[in-house]
Amino acid sequence: MRFPPELCGKIAQDIRDSDWELHEHAPDIEQWKDENATLYALSLVSKVWRAETIRHLWSGIILSEGIDDVSDGGPSERLISRILASCNASKHNVAPYIRRLYVEGTCNEMEESDVISGICDFLTTCSRIHYLRLEFHAHPRRLMVLRTLSSLRFPHLKTFYLAVAEAENKESEHLSDFLLVHPGIQLLRLEGLSRMLESQFQSLREKCPLPALEKIVTDILSLPILSSSSPVKTIECIPSLSAGSHSAGTGAFIWALSRLAHPLPNVTELVIHRGGFEVDSVVLPGLGHFFPSLQVLDGVSVSELFFKLMGSVDRRVSPSDSFLPKLHTLVMYEIYGRDSKSYIQGVAFATPTDAAIEKAVKALPFHFPAIVSAMYVKEGHESLQITTSKIMTRHFLEDGTVDESQSNT
Image (cartoon, rainbow, N blue to C red):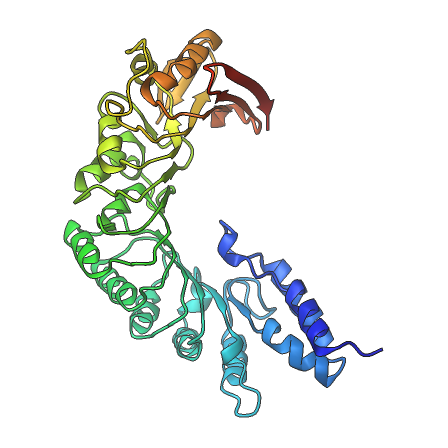
């Protein structure tokens, strides 16, 4: 039975996971291998199947630990050479099909200069990439790759991930050069840049406006790279690759706000992973100043100061007097432990009672007149080894009533 080429192409397209951009984590290597095996088998059926499957087979490439049997720590020289040969083949050049590339270098296997040179050569062949993810955690030769990267052009690039353990000044310069010539980036994820000097932040702000940027994922201390002209709507702050309290918590968040050159008027969603900061009488005005259009705030750590702030007013403020007049969704986190103690950034305080939580949540409309939904998440301290979370959700209706629900996840 013969299938029409269009149907063969549709089947091949459905086999390959094309949603790497939507995944928070790196692409699943085992799933990628299974997809490759299926697509390769289909390519052997007939010339029609080969013609329709080859572009999907090569649409996503992973160079990482565990992708071949030769290396247990990264892509081997043999594998890199094999891929390069396919990309440079005069008869069936597959380079035009490559749309997504993930490279991870973490170990001694990739310290071989031939492997690094091979990756650099491979990058030069992938001009049609629209998804590029590079992870070089503590890798000694990563600068060679970044230097090559800064000289390349990917006209269709939409998603760019870069993760390094500790960025050096030279690396930040290469990053600046790369971003400058890729104005079409819509999703940007940067890890390990928190120790860049403030002068580098200023340089990035001035040189790299990123006019198409919709979302940035980075650690708190890297927020100053954004300029006031940035169109970014969503900011997601993740834990820094650099261990230490300097890269997380309320103090780090206040520091980052103080280094922002101007407000970011287009940001409507701010997500701080796992309750990254507390909102008190100092932080709230800062949020209002730098994020005047904020609609969704996820990541507030509850604390004694938070409950005090919620109880500081007893009537609804007008939008003109609210620090966040457009905020409609708020997600709060409480980390509870033993002996009626809860924690914020390692500091214990008395676990709030259910009545105190309810009172604070019902006071949210007093501070945020546009509030529609609030979620209060109680998570056990790591010492408790509890994997479930208690979630309390409140929906504020137009008639002033509150719709309540609770769940465990």
